[in-house]
Structure formats: C-alpha cells, structure tokens
Length: 440
Image (cartoon, rainbow, N blue to C red; front, side, top):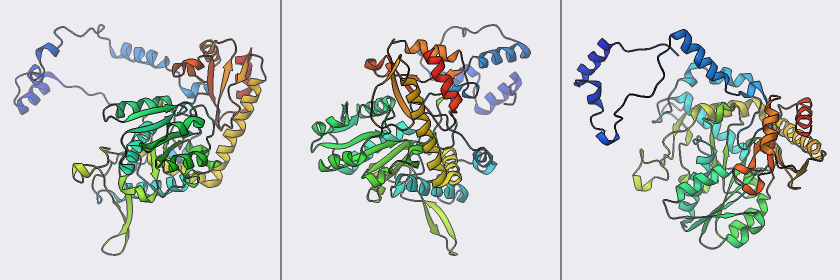
C-alpha cells in the first residue's frame, strides 16, 4: 500500500477546517472513565529498513496453504481456482464498483447478480435465489428467521447436531434475543420426537459437518407432516453428483460459497448462498436482481422485491441485511459458468473417489478406525486409537501437511477423532504421504 502521512501543519489545517482546537478535542465526547490516561505500551520506533524486516519476519510465521498440502476442511476447502476467475473478477469495473443501492446505478453489476441467481437456482434445484449473503453461517440464521416469518411459528426451531457447530452458535446467539427455543437433535433418527405443531423449521446439513450424506427426501416428509419447513445447508461442490435439494423437497437452501472459485483467505470474507421456493420469494432477505425491459424495449436489470427497511416500511421488512458479497458472487458465477454441469460433476467425482481412497488407506492401519459407515462425500472422520490427535497434527506440520481438523474443539466426546477433507487438488502421492506420516 502507498506510504501516507500527515505533517503537523496538515493536522493543524484540518483541525482549523472543522473548528477544533486540538486532536484531543475530537475525543472530548468520550467519558473520562473510558479514556486511556497513559501512553500506549509500544516498542521503540524503528527505521524503515528495520520495520520492513520485522514485518516480514512476522509474516513468515503464517502457514500459507500454498506452502503446505491441505487436508483441512470443516467449512473451508482447498479447491482449485481456475485462472480465468482472477482474470475476470479483477477487472476494474467489477473489482472497484460499489454494491448498487438503486436499480439504475450499475447495469453490469445487476446483470452479474441476475446471472449468479440463475446459476444458483440451476445448481440447487430451487426457484429463486437472492444476490448472496455474508457467509454460510449468516445465511443459515436468515433462513431460520425467514421460516419463522412464513410459518408464523416463533416458539421453537430444531437443528441437527451434525450441522456446523459455528452455524449453530450463530443461530443460538440470534435466537436468544427473540425468545425462540433452539432444540438440538443428536441424530436424524431422533427428529420425529422433537417435531410438533409449534416447530417453525428444521435445519439439516448435507453433506453434514462430518462429511456424511443425509436422506433429505425422508427428512422433508417428516418435517412437512408437522407443518414446518426444511432448511438445508449444502456443499455446492457435492451437487455435481448428489441429488439437488430442491428435488428432494427442501424448502430453503443455504450454503457457504467459498468452494466456488474463492481461495481460503484465512477464513474470509466468504459468500453466503440462499435460495428458496417461489412461493416464499416475498420473505427472502437481501437483494434480488430482476430482468425487465426499458422504455425502448431493451433488456435491462433492476433490483426487485427489495425487502429491507431502507426501501420499505420497517415493520414490513424481512431482514436488516444491508449488502451482499458482490465480488464473491461474481467469482462463483464465473466458476459455475466455466465448469458447467459436466465440470461440476467431474470435480465432485474426483473429490468422492479420492476421499474414499484416503479413508480406506488410513483405516487399513492398525492405529485408525472409521467412526461411521454412512455414505460420505469428500470429508470423513477417523478415530486415533492412541488418542493423540494434536500430536498427529503437529507431526504432520513438520512435513508441510495440514492433516485435518481436531474435532474435540466442538465435540468433547470426539476428542480422539480427526476430520479429514480431500478435494480434487490432492494427488495420490500426497494422500499416500499423509498415510505414511500419520501411520509411521
């Protein structure tokens, strides 16, 4: 970034322009009890050469995926990003443009939103999509709030324990303030006991946090019989080979869209995907781009069905979502366009085959065993019989392997278990190296 500074003379000029006598006066509205009465505890100043060297040393402490072989997953995945995505998404008209607040601001951005929505509908089997939300977690909670609004039931919602634990934390945080009970069910087989005529929605994830594929058709039948809605969080890549949730009876689909053309980026910012059935479109939060014609009969795009309080009366708003992840939605649209149905199928099949090969090789070792025999996609859980998961992960790092995610962080009963993700990028040699390192 460019080197910028303010001289004392420039500071005085700015203070004079705003009518302040000093910088301290700018903070006079802050109560004295909340002001720091001492100097900041900072090390001595460094020259530019020394400071640059110090910052580079700090940067070297980061472990970049490009320096390691990544088998970590749990919601963020090391998928291949085609070069065309960076080339197109970094064009100035996309990279620097601001999210439009009015329909006429940017036809190019609105067209991208419309094409993104169309692709998401084709991918998920749903009727309508919004122009994206913040991330997978915010999409999940917005979908549950949307279900409460549709069903007019606010007493409780049900969430399967196999849903991403951080998504469940977000939902519990939101719902703690509105009085809706969040019931967590440990397995899909126990769902029926939690359903009644006060249940607004059920949130399921498939493939779930442990990588296993859920029977969405059966779940949808149970949920609908109770008059509730089924919300499903999906892995978009899995839809290259798995049945689309819209075809299985799901009412609202959400997803983390990072795997569609966005690198890991230290955990974000990412892309929240949300789509639903057409009958629920007026309750769909966020922006929705629509296609129409102008006065001359030319095709054009507008923001339509704007459901936030900036555009309509507050009591009519369905959400306070203020913006969308336009740049990452663009990347997802480019990715889906470039891959097409055949490419998505190929990527999903490679993930499936390589993940099953890795699980088979690891469970052939005496030290490890599979935790479940359920069908899985690209992630699976193995148990370390010696109960030294952290030791295994540290040992793998010595060989530049990010071997997986320790599950004890969220599930104490699985403290001896490791969640491993295998994407299309992983080669047979890399998988064999992982097996050799963990098993040696």
